[in-house]
Image (cartoon, rainbow, N blue to C red; front, top):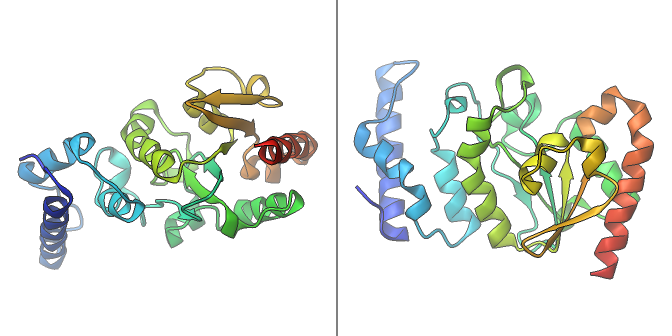
Length: 231
């Protein structure tokens, strides 16, 4: 079964939702989609998704990797859909998984302060993660999980069309830059991929554990602000 247009996609998703609700009512704690549904999700790359709400509906039903078994909520992303600045983190944490929103825990509060220091408000930017579901115990994402989510992130970037991206943490930087470089090798400079400027810095969660990294982070975000103003 191949989904050919948006109306068919909506029909399939509604049917899938009904199926999942029926399975939950039966009482099973864990169940799997029938093959006819799985084939639809495996062919997502062929679907023409035109808006972020359409993409979000797809992501909410995603079972492309094992993280769907342990998540509480999918953390799709949030913010200004016309933002010139996009922030990309690694993966949801405990609070993000609980609420279904990116950067709402202690790291999110610190991120808000960082943005404020360079005259940005959360309402002006769009925030997403490489991985849309929380890895158990906040472990590092594995390559197959990153690969499973990359289609979604690429679609988000294409729809938002930011002028500049702030990559938060090593995994975000390596994934966006398609690089194996260390964080120290990536930060402190302006990269460019597909016409989009990219600045890499420490993840706010890391700053909560290592206060000595706040100074270099401040240098990175000043570089971000300077580059943004020039654009």
